[in-house]
Length: 622
Image (cartoon, rainbow, N blue to C red):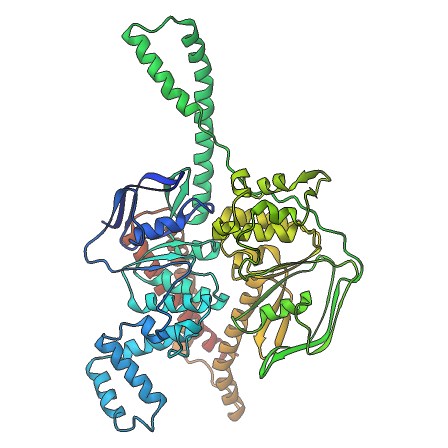
């Protein structure tokens, strides 16, 4: 049974139709990704489904008793409330008790007499489990100062507050609009794990393809004012999308060929008098409508070249930077080489953006030296708000850089033609900047960077507000970019595809130089943790051997157990492999999918336990 149903809904603004006569449903436990190019109405649809906006036609139904929560791209709260008050309903008895208990813990001298009573009430209301969850969520989201006023928070921090509210409310139906924007990679991976394992119904707009693939089992695609639903993973959706487009193209071509024959017949006939002739004329009109459909898709074109680099690009000699007691970079050395492709990772607030500002010269280092090559031309795409005058027209901004631009194939095009390639048709070119959507502003900002033909390109969170189609085209361009590339991004797919070298910001000014992309780094971390865990288990037994001159040998039963473990592990792995294939088979029954997923988790735990036991016993073999 559907928890949410949309029946023949439509929405338009002025003369722009976003979608019309759209019908779909979302079942209990289904996790759905909403995809489509910028401007097709993804955020608007989420607002309609969450009752933030009315629909022009049709209706939206949510099953009775279903608790719904909505995370917008830019959450807003009462500026005078604290973080705690914004997350929780302070009239709730349990929440008020937790708040009083937290205050008593933070000020034990003032609340010494009240603390025992508060602890007894926590026992009575069984509030300890919830208190543990609140602590975990607030800690993961780095919301340590819950008494801070909302007015003092940045946009990214407000998003964390909104996420905390949703995670702690535990709603049945969750609608999320770009939940991974402004979050660091560690937190995104934690959110992935949370939503993938929770028995919640989810509808999410995201450009994060790893998040989409790991969490979602259905895709809603907005295109040509309608919605297509696909069961299965994102990769499966791409296959089906290509098949559908090929089929549509073939159908339209067939209709056009048939229309030529019918048009010839229509022209040779006198005015239709018979029923059969009238029917054929009416059928021709229907055929004409189908044949007039277009399969052309407007796609971004990037064909701007970069300048040639010299021998010296940029050298960092012992640079350091700090603000008060906060150290962002400490005695860092690096010599940039031609075609360097570097990803920068680290938690929010450790100094990644400061480092980029040092590279561009926007900030001077406190000590050390930055030497830039004479032929090095930096292009800097920042994550900050769009800097151009909101009352300027789009075409005036581009013409302020150049009225005629040379492309990578040596041709010259006008500013207007270049804007067309960046999906700014003539009507948008003469629009004021303030009327552009978030995605359009980011696209225009990217164009103003690339039009200057940089050969040292710095991108700070370039994927925010860009749709997946645009990201794929940008990735293709950057993959062939002939200069140096430095990327800060929470989009792991983006950085994995484009970088082969990583600066890891570990905090306190420490920057680790790692040879490999983000996934390589994460794999190395996992292997190091596993090695440390095995070492901890092995260490006591090896110490024991040193204390006793003769090592303990396996007993007969332990030998039998050891010999059987390999077969047991192999059998469990085979069972897990079979279930994993079933999970990726395209099965649409969500109860079955959930059951398989739970079985896989149980098998994984069993395999890990048996592997640990096998390692313990293997240490005792002569």
